[in-house]
Image (cartoon, rainbow, N blue to C red; front, side, top):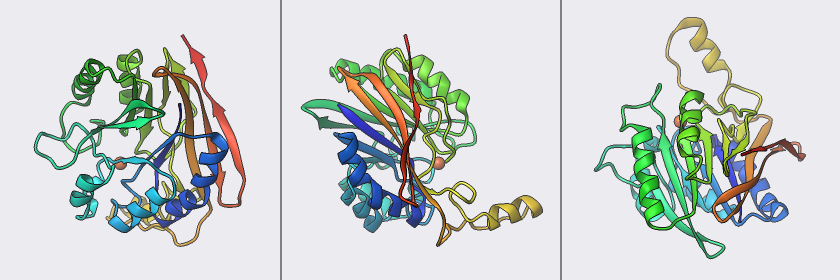
Length: 270
Ligand code: FE2
């Protein structure tokens, strides 16, 4: 089973990169299932119904969220009607779900969305929640478990890997928008601290650089804007699984100039 994981899609430039490259990459990489993070997809904040349809129409099968899940009010209905997740460790009673089961290549595949603790909204303990979910999935006999760990701190992401590497198939980091080079397969679990954004690669975390520079110079608040024009990038981790264990993982980048390259291959650690 071959799965593609795209990190945070940021605004129109990100969606444009998805529309342009995902159908082609799905074909060339022989992908059976594609996951992406939607939380910044609509002008950098949340997800609209129109943009959800646009992304699913481009060949994404399911999407995960994060702290920005709630930025567009219409998400409440979409969480009910579309294959969209929000972090599982929001308290009980919060709309949506953080775990979903899909059938891929005739096998059950679980997608799990967890949010970290550091510099994030006050939610339930991500590690206790993750353990509880994994126990339930194991009891159900689900072998392929793919986790989006949406967190600021790389230490939390690595700790989740060390805690769950024997029992989940992949842990892909999102939220920082900056891709890291620590892609690895540990005990059959594919891991990277952050996949990195899909959107503008020449500004600041996909947002127009003017606002963050002004904020850092003055300490005054400013509203982030997604640039109209920029150099785009799509970043995806491609993973291959056999009986729920990762056997290969590599990262590809596509650029708005048209080039697609493999930039990292996971070392397989016992
Ligand atoms: Fe986030």
